[in-house]
Amino acid sequence: MRWGLLGLLPVVAAAALGLTRVDSQRLSQSTTSLEERDASQRHNILQAATRLDGLYLEPGEIFSFNQQVGPRTLERGYLPAPAFMTSETVDSVGGGICQVSSSLYEAALRAGLRVIERHAHFTTVESVPTGLDATVWYGQADLRLQNPYPWPIRWRVRASQHHLIISLYGSTALPLQPLQRQESWRDPQHLLVSVYQGSRLISEDVYAVVSQGLHASQKNPWDPGQPTEIRHWEDQPQGD
Image (cartoon, rainbow, N blue to C red; front, side):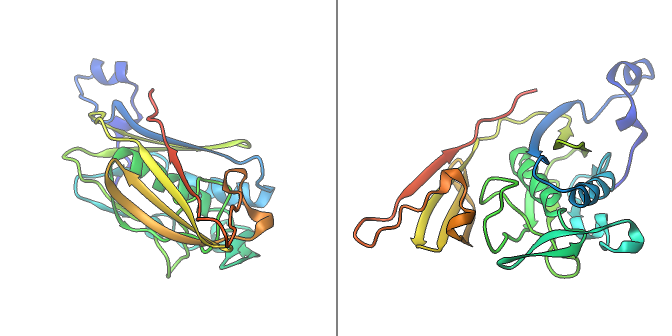
């Protein structure tokens, strides 16, 4: 992984120098809201974002979120903030950065990166669509991605008071099939979410769900006398 000078040059400047940009096409983009985050969570998200922005992932190279972002400690500038710990929300140093790893995971799927390691949360989260989350915990749970393309991929990670935007760039925008999620209730407290890209199964996760924590699109239809509801969701490809 590297931060390249060419990636910092605008297209016109690169052309004037006789250089060819390998990151001129946006492969994918993930945008998530920070409106519900408190100040400490936003601070931690910004800390993690600055350690990812401008990164180049070389052909065949494997990225590790924990290795790149590093330990989440007070000495490294992170603050105590609410974070999910199994089924509870507790204050933890670096709390909130799972939104960065989850947004990156979603962008990686859209761009066709190979997922080497990813862990779902124990329960549903509101920052990203269920099934597209990726929890990280230094030394235990990591997000690892591999570049399957013959050219580098550049990452653009921006965080403001309102949004986190992660964009991946490469030399060629490939026509990838949209992501699809299928939701079904296994019982009153557990939601099964399957994620597909075309006909290929990406992941299949079971989430613990408490009634007051349900998303608007996840109303529990459970009724012992009725068949379990299956809900489909299709993502639309994002253009420039």
